[in-house]
Image 1 (cartoon, protein in one colour):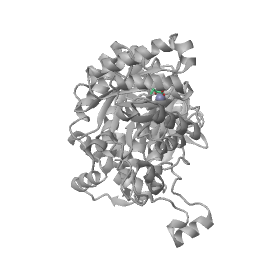
Image 2 (tube, rainbow, N blue to C red):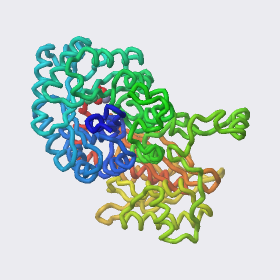
Image 3 (cartoon, rainbow, N blue to C red):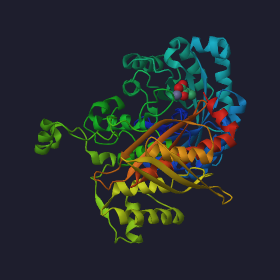
Image 4 (cartoon, helix red, strand yellow):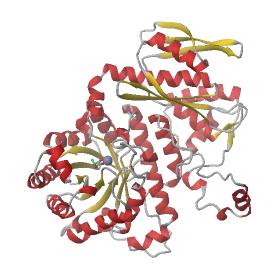
Length: 538
Ligand code: KIV
Ligand code: ZN
């Protein structure tokens, strides 16, 4: 195979994951540094080519997260680690500094090119933007050979001006030019034509990879990208579960599975024989489901049940006619196998008598490589669960491991919670929380229901004003003894904080999820500069 084309990715599609940058801009998705590292590790297992780990100049926390990911995940043989920077020297130098530890690193710099952004946001002329783009790409190039340039709001920019900016950015050293539909405005045919126009009108376009980036305001991001691929795009910028600013970004799992399931359709656009079975991306599709669950759990952003590929109903057949067809032959109503995204049958794997070794081995098989400390914590939870639940499935294991290894900064620790309720009792809760200095605080409250009583009691202890805006319980497996996963979101001023927890007792899970969210809120109150910088992102 041609090494040059391999390096530039022209004979396959590069997957650029921006869950930790653009995805994290979703309201309330804010992740701790350790949570970002956990996600980055999983993205590397998934096989993404590039991880956009953050926007280092935006806050000290983002800087540290990018640096840690560069150090621990950007190792030899791992993905390229990328940092975002506006087209300013300070932003670019800060990104370069944070990315230093990575074996392969990329600086992604951007400036808007649409007239509307130039006039109202930048207050600059086209000539000024052209000069800045060229100068800042050259500046970024002084730190690394791998520079990506984005003309923000390209979807609404004058194509003739766009061609000029891209030509100058490539001449200054950009190896990737990324075309963002920042406001999710274009339609597939328009976006495809935009990419074709760039290919045909930017004289030095052969020296760069064309990338696409898009938001889902009209629900068209994935369709736009697939049209872009047909017209020459070879890098797709996307996020797990499609999370991101407003309606989100193009969803990685949808793009990857569309390219996988329909590879015979897409092969010729990449110059391959139509019947080639070679993968169009480097993604290990079997890691998709697990990555989706991890991101959902850590960000607190639930996946809608009918979401393509990773939604709870994506592989469920409800109608009798469909069920009958599938029983006769799966191909009647299934275009892909649930196992191809790593959704194993709800396998019963372990029970009460299973020992530590069996536990460790099964976790390894499921792709969890835990430290000794995390393994110990997860094993204790497993034993507790095995006392309550006869058969423990892979999904149960995944749920307790994700829960135990979640890295919420802990100021308030839930010691215990007790509730009385029933049709002849006023729901009453007593809770005890422990502070870092060991002090234990206890209080009680009456509520409209048991969860309300617990939350009121916790509020009396912590005394941190907030408004609960979302509460949801989902069961991990079928059966009355299933683990319940509680996800909550709460709001203080304009900021949203999420919390997640899993337990066979949903009252305990509810209390723990609430305490997790309060811990995040509390951490933000201690470091307001981090959240202000985060709010001021892009
Ligand atoms: O949506 C957008 O335009 C962006 C750029 C920074 C690429 O996120
Ligand atoms: Zn974006």
